[in-house]
Image (tube, rainbow, N blue to C red; front, side):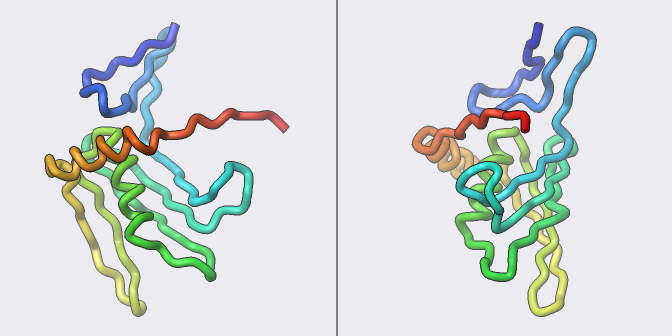
Length: 130
């Protein structure tokens, strides 16, 4: 029935899944910073995926919280699991926009992410209907 059609290394997750005559490709991701799904979240990131590149086109927090280095490291860890090589985003500070590009293909970062992924396994969420 469903079979992954990716030839990526085991530490990465496939963005392509084939079911019957359809291929499903992950092209966009919405990430929310929250302890439990369904609760109010304190930050959101919209990420567009294109080949080995990602662009974070929306990164917002509520007024009472800032983005920390750990937040960016978590986003990078997730993108590395998807096989992303480079992530780009615009950073707004003091009413000025600065374009940033981060190379995720660095072997040391991949090793760090692989070790972190072993200790902090992604949590599977159950979808429930209301």
